[in-house]
Length: 257
Ligand code: SF4
Image (cartoon, rainbow, N blue to C red; front, side, top):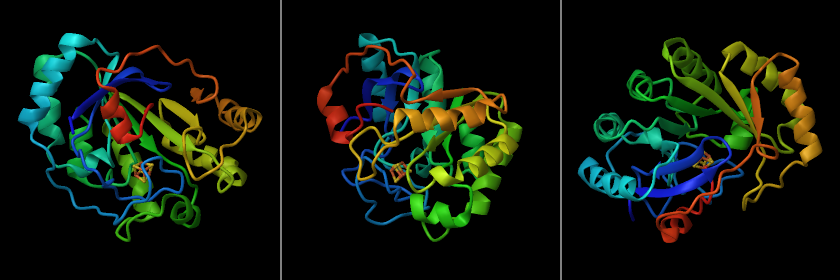
């Protein structure tokens, strides 16, 4: 597998060139979200380690940037990107060869670790997951590793918000399991104070049924009442893109980030 894929047409980030520092046939993640489009997590983990070499990534990025100019380069891929322990070196390496903004799509679960916060603090955009207002719903929807608690997850996001000068977006997947908690989620999000709230529902292939456009509009209004900056998967415009290698996208089963 290549470490670089796309660019994908992202409703959150525009034309996004993906960097996958995991490159595993099986998803490597600290969560096993009900709606995950990568399938079941065989075994959740919180152990950070190296999966691919930065030398390989660098060669592939240089080649890709000869062919395409994305709006953003995004750490994402076959699992939770912050589980890799050579991401900081990857960021420094890409910064030396490109001025394109760097982003990560993270499930937030490792943001309570100082080394993870210090690494993603070097990015321009951090898109962090927050699907639940409490431990009970967190366990139902995200099915986290036993070492992760809801409280620490939220504390990690709050600590990061205090130190980060880039754009922090919170991504929330709404579905039947959390729609009745929308007000509690709004309260929690307001307390964190992100730069943007990304309102999502599983429109891609997923075992979970998506909410309707109307339902998502009503949820979005709840955030807007509090003057929060929102985007929604139903209404956000997606740019046209031409992936460099379609198989690399199909391998990851992510046609969009
Ligand atoms: S955090 Fe992302 S990759 Fe991990 S299980 Fe959830 S949706 Fe899938």
